[in-house]
Length: 214
View 1: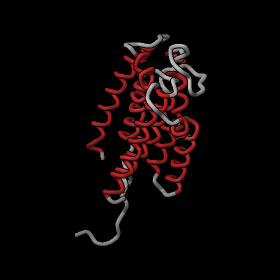
View 2 (view 1 turned 90 degrees about the horizontal axis):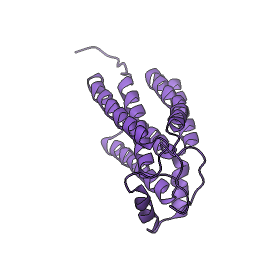
View 3 (view 1 turned 180 degrees about the vertical axis):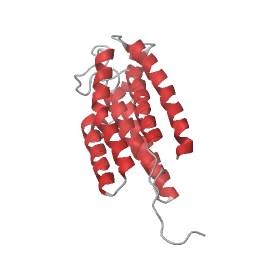
View 4 (view 1 turned 135 degrees about the vertical axis):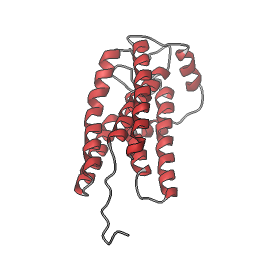
């Protein structure tokens, strides 16, 4: 995996640049570049409040953080020390970094009459917490799956499911009117920074095999 570390580092750098640009643009800003019209258009489409609520819960910072720390503990118990340390750091710092970015941006939430609010929210709007936490949680699950010894079909299926949940989080937060599109983009960008940095730092332990060397 070491030979792929530079690719993850490059992706982290690119995402950091994109996230920084979005952070500067969103600083104390209202809707940008026709975002209000885009949200109204999406809200005019048929959607399921129950589905949006479930998706938003699945990508909430609290359950994602708890699940990540439990995964780190399980990895430590199984002897996957590198995985456990990187995963623990990743998910322990997620709420801290996310809160810091929100305070820096200090962006107001969408509000009536510009949009229809279909869910509650209290923290600053940028970056979208569900988008960032969802990408970190399910993005890291996808990275873990691709580096596992699962069959190829299982690895691909897990990755596709994780990608679907991440994509659905964008719809859920826009359809409920609690975020602007650039909030979602910012959440994805900063989440990518964290996952890429973690993937660059983690090299799966090689299992020792018994027997004579040929």
